[in-house]
Amino acid sequence: MVVPIHQQRVLSGMRPTGQLHLGHYHGVLKNWIKLQHEYDCLFFAADWHALTTHYAETENIEENTWEMVIDWLAAGVNPGSAKIFIQSQVPEHAELHLLLSMITPLGWLERVPSFKEQQLKLKEKDLATYGFLGYPLLQSADILIYRAGLVPVGEDQVAHVELTREVARRFNHIYGREPGFEEKAEASVKKMGKKQAKLYNQLRNRFQEQGDHEALQTAQALLEGQQNLTMGDRERLFGYLEGAGKIILPEPQALLTPASKMPGLDGQKMSKSYGNTISLRDDMDIIDQKLRKMPTDTNRVRLTDSGDPDKCPVWQLHEVYSDEERKNWVQEGCRSAGIGCLDCKRPLIKAIQEELKPIQERAKEFSENRALVRNIVAEGREFASDLAKATLDEVRQAIGIQYR
Ligand code: TRP
Ligand code: SF4
Image (cartoon, rainbow, N blue to C red; front, side, top):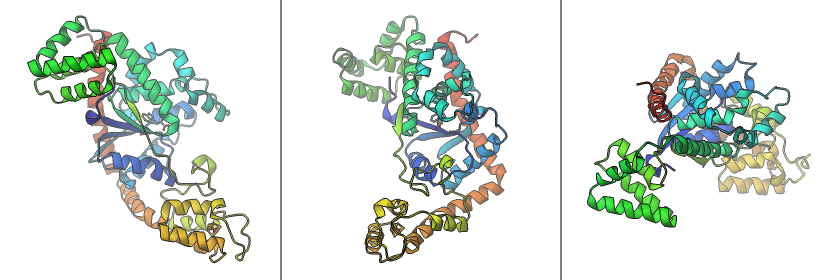
């Protein structure tokens, strides 16, 4: 069962790896900044996820978290639109993780691709741990505790959202069976009034008997617009549409982040582990140096040699930063040996410096005002906590351990 588009909440997290670089900015952050105007967004620092691989090196996690949050704010994540918080400060994630662990088959976790991949990649660490196996399930708890509808993630995380959907489905299947569900659902249908109830039933039949997804969406929109229904009625009717029981944890959808075109200084993907990054807070003269040192088409040894932009990582930067006119200038000048490589780099140096200047000014302000940053995160935490507590209440009730 999928949440209808218009009631969707967006949630995403990032592991605190310290100061962010231009790859993060052009990939993840600009996307978040766009989404915050379109949806209710929650963004959090996944510090527990950092522990799954860095359990033995925890000395920097806290500082890395603050620095990362400062970069989010400096880049333009706006706490007026999006809530920002720290995972470990909302311990409800952990309780849901525990409860989900009870119903999650081991095989589901063992066959998540990142499990084996990361173990191989980080051979020097012992990742045959319980926590590491549970990495994607903790992520599922992060998502489901807020009943998020959309989860912006990169390609490598889509499998985790897929797992989340399976776990939610299983949870609803096991615990969504209220006694007398059908009777209650029928009673809720009646509350919509004769005409609407008839329409609901028709749409429900069309979906259940013919698998008509359009009918499902229409019915979901119909429920959205009902003023006479309580939250409980409405939720029951969402579940009843698909013939399931009550939907306690709705299935989220991955919102694939468009791959960042930002290349690293060597033309590979920009990544800390390749040592090819421009950090958002690199000094202006460091940026200058890094770009000057950037390798170019290796066939272009002398100024009089012509070059081929397709073989040059600097060209990939022009693809991100330059307009058509300047791109033509590069193409012609390079192929005819009419411009030198430093000439070619100069406008890029300027463009990157100009892009980062305001970000750095804001980062400096936030760095000098940690109290403000702590306040923003405290506010985000409070907001997130309320949502998380409400979900957990229902989850406990559905399982039968509410003790009231
Ligand atoms: N695993 C994600 C990453 O490495 C971070 C993350 C943790 C996350 N929990 C999440 C992303 C929940 C989206 C939703 O990038
Ligand atoms: Fe690369 Fe520009 Fe030099 Fe051509 S002129 S090789 S595109 S840096």
